[in-house]
Image 1 (cartoon, helix red, strand yellow):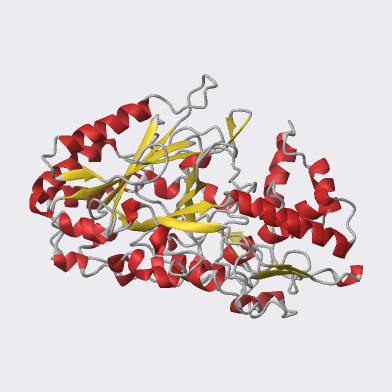
Image 2 (spheres, helix red, strand yellow; image 1 turned 180 degrees about the vertical axis):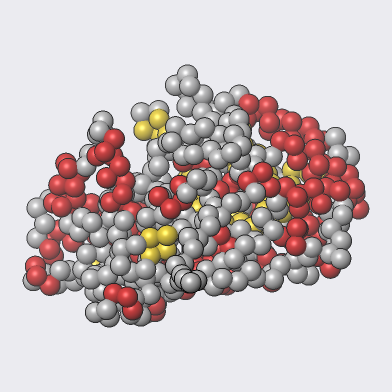
Length: 545
């Protein structure tokens, strides 16, 4: 007698070709031991494409791949272990750059329209054409009317910090920078470094993590702890590690269960959340294991931000009868971001006293690994179910806009948990966030801000959608035209509404006349090729047939 079984086989773990993928896709260098960086922008002479390809080929052996090196955070390395570099080098190209290098037109016509057009041409989608955020204020290197040439290539150098307490990058960063500069000089004019980034050196964008007592930290210039709940996807880590860290960063079913997102949301040539492999530029090896980056330089007006917060906090203290200005200020900052300044989410600690209690129970400086592990879990393991009115975390707070989790689940109110969709509508909008601050610690002269590298498989569906629909618009959150209170565009009548818990009997607080806290200083869209595609580009062989 034959017995048939209907047991569903266990899903096979995704195994990525790590040696074929550039390392800055899978690894957030700034948070993992590389707190210093320099980003260079290059331009090619189209008439000297062979020499430009020789330049690319010279860089190829030094590019850092996704092969893992031993980690202090106990992240498994996989079967092949790489040596941890002193400086991680990675490259990417604009559409014009690929064209200048002689990539086949039959290949390039398979690229998506958003990438072909570039960031500047699509600035109306991103909100970079408004009086409060004008494109005319972009750095010269990104401004065609002021640039020395067309942006063709991005070279990113992420470096470790010296261990001598000086806060300086390792000397290898200077060595690598000089090597690239010399390589350009020897190209006979085929490759030029474009100047005009703003900052201490016009030839490159200088970046550095902020420091506390000389030690790199995860803070940004407005005082918030950054880089929490970055997406986790299948294959990102070996040995099933992605499943263990998918809580808060992956997809949720609305019942508290988490899983890694589909690989194809961040890497081309792999199935995405729709279980599809979208069409791509041919041949397939040219696109597979590559992705796109939206390079976006954002200046932060720290003075205007702090002044507005002080004024609004004074009004909040009176309206809600809070015990001190400190409580009002910290509460206002938390309501704007959706997290307290140390990263604790409002969904976990909705008021000032519960925040203090949380930090007493799970102190950030605890020596107990179990306490730190539980604190880390609670910082990411939360949903918005049960807080539809935003009395705990405002529905238009920054993190609730950028990562809606289960908030847009049309079945969220369904009493049958199995009917819920969880984060299904959010899963197609996730973005890997890379980059670092610029301008030094607050108190250092000069403009301050952050360069964000938004990594995604579809610039339009992921980066542009979030920037336009969720950051600079409020209709999805029943907030009309209200924009993000921190990074949105703010006209003269911009406001931020903070709902109060009905049990307190307090009225909502309308934080009025938001100032323009951030301004775009430039950027573009780049294709990050795999090592295979990079070899094709360097050799001039991308025949789509």
